[in-house]
Length: 310
Image 1 (cartoon, rainbow, N blue to C red):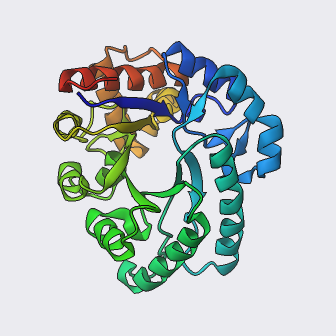
Image 2: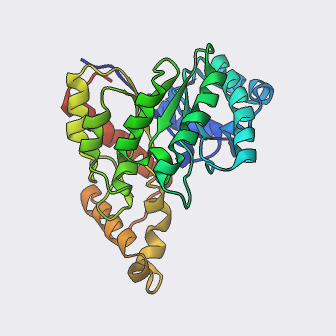
């Protein structure tokens, strides 16, 4: 049996920490992935400010961090000033991770902009190695997420990057099926290519229309992925990142504003898919909390069907 710990980007429901904690506890969870905390990005906190304003709440409520949802590496590859600022922020993030006994800081491999990705490879590697020098010896790993329009947005480049850096003690991989789908990549093929190196999973699904849907309703092939992970004895975090706040917030405008369904055809098709699969009437709206709970409950069901221990 594989022990899976469910975490989540609870800021998709609210930027208020107490609201995030209340929802996590209502679902029986005590891990969250901080991205926006009390209306402020986690990377915008200094360690001292975090220690004073946030840490006491976490300790009181017995809430832990699975990873820090930082934007490190989400900057143009040639943005020298931006990269300098990110290195300074990483120093503070490491201190926050250490005081919360969190072992991962999420990162990205830089936007390539108008360049071809391979033109940026050497510079991407060099910059990530600079970041690695900052985390070495701290007990914290950099956790690379595949994301659209960064160097590591498709599995072949993710693998090349991982094997070139070749530092599993300090640099690990996070897998996001939806992000691969949005890059026109088969998520099953990406999983099979990278499964030996991935240590952390973001749970996000995407329809064939390029719009996110609750896990299990899209093209993410999660039944296969979760079954394979159980067979492999995977033990680790799965962080809910539904991005389906779009359905909660945009359904009514897309359906009822004149011509919106034509101008946002893919949103309309994806939202109708969600309606049908979740048994939601055409005129019924739902909250961001409702959609997040769907994501949680769908994942639990899929994990149970795969035979995982959660």
